[in-house]
Length: 387
Ligand code: NZQ
Ligand code: ZN
Image (tube, rainbow, N blue to C red; front, side):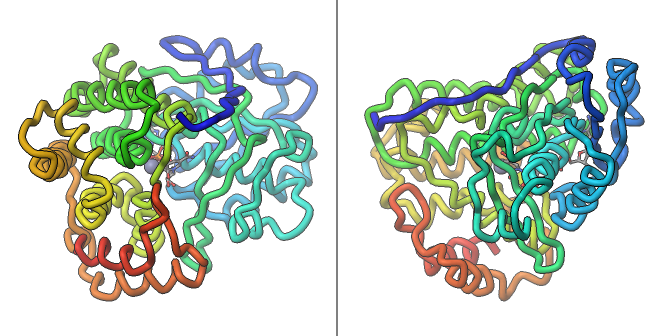
């Protein structure tokens, strides 16, 4: 097992009716900026219960954070925070609102051009150099409520870039599974596939000696396979909703990657498809993931076979189990309402593979994946196979 440090300071408050705890969690001696997205919180009662919990506190609001949040939108909030001298941020929404708040938190006191945080992937480590924030999660998917990463799109250049650092953990996150009742089915399906792929990014690598990590990953995969299709149909079922939500948090709160190699190339390629064609994040993963496993088959097949055997009960030779495991994954993605070909989302795909290859080369992203063997040429092959 590789050496590791496990640091996660987020106070995760999980369950029904937990919103009332918000009152005690926020600071009382400063103005708070409540940040939200396109307005779903007004239709499902979340805004009202947040406002009730914050009565007596000075609260300003910043709405209109789009899905796949834009740098340009975040910078408007940065200006407002400076002007109003705001000391705490509250993200109320899904991964997009939480990620935007992470960026805003880092950008306010950043010494230099905040776009550099993204372009140069600057690690945000100093808690005194950020505005503290908490979250109220409304969409289980990304794990952003309990991790220190974020993904921001620069609209002007159509680039979707990641950043993070130890100062980017939420102070607290309120996770009430009943919030999923108002989610469109498509978003629940996205959430399940995003979380499932987060586990695969940290599991489908090569055999190692961190046996417990494998078993934890497999437990999350099996649970998502069990509850995913059902919760999309029955979002009011609390047993399904709570397990779905907890799986999503556990898939990307930093526990799974401890002591093991990780991949993340499916995400890096998928982000390009969102930046170029505005395809939902999870759907880009369903397009790219299986084709990445096909192209990188030789170096991933041991782990693919283990996944096939333990998760889908497959038998046969290593190659047979590994190949069948990829097909089972695609089957699950289809069951979760995903289309798994780029041509099913856009007609304008012919130059995508070459474009992404060139972009990665320019950025110096020449060795990705757990073995650093996913070169720009391999990326091109993966994307072309995804048409
Ligand atoms: O904007 P509103 O009106 O709130 O509507 C949202 C949005 O349209 C809606 N929604 C959220 N909660 C709802 C609801 N509608 C009804 N009822 C509710 N309870 O759902 C839509 C999608 O929301 P969004 O926040 O964009 O979805 P998600 O949570 O999937 O986040 C996706 C973003 O997170 C990034 C993705 O790249 C993408 O930008 N990711 C962040 C990660 C992280 N920070 O660790 C990791 C992930 O891999 C991912 O890359
Ligand atoms: Zn993801």
